[in-house]
Structures are given as structure tokens and as C-alpha cells.
Length: 112
Image (cartoon, rainbow, N blue to C red; front, side):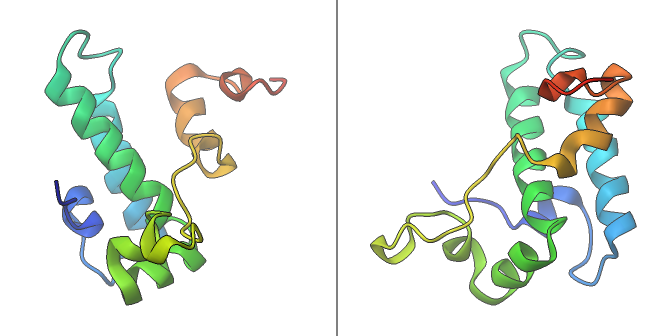
């Protein structure tokens, strides 16, 4: 199964600024968050897809690699090297997004 273009997933242009990327992700995350759409598998899929896109595009290094090599640069399975960036929900880049949902830093085990 091929993945959709991350820019398409977030509904932004390839020249989008960091704030535009963040704004687009927040909108989709709020719309498709599993807590707001319990039992809706399609919403959960869209939430995960948007989160994955944001994880790559919000990081300048990962975004640059993605822009140059597409999904092969970030999937971790490209060329058998395992050198892709992968996807990590524990990234501190998500902290402010989850703070918006939950009101504090406890989501990642940190103190409030």
C-alpha cells in the first residue's frame, strides 16, 4: 500500500512555513482525534496519517530528506540500511500539541 504525500495529507503546499504546518496538523488532529471519534476506524487512520506527516514535516532535517527522497528517506526500510528517520510519537515536537488536548505535560510522563 503506497502512502499519500505528506503535504497532501496536511493540505498544505511544499513551501508551507512551520506555523502553517503546525496549524494544519492541529486542525486535523482535533478533527480526527480518537477520543472525539471513538470506534471510528477511518478517523483513527486519518489521525495517525496526519501525525506521521507532522512528525516528518515539522523537523527541518527530516523534511529536507523527505523533499529530496520521498517516503524512502523516512520509512526506515529503504535500501536495507535501516537509516530512515522512522516515526516516533515520543518526540518533544508533539508536546505542545498534546498540551492543547490534555492541558499539561503529563501525557509523555513529564511533570506539569
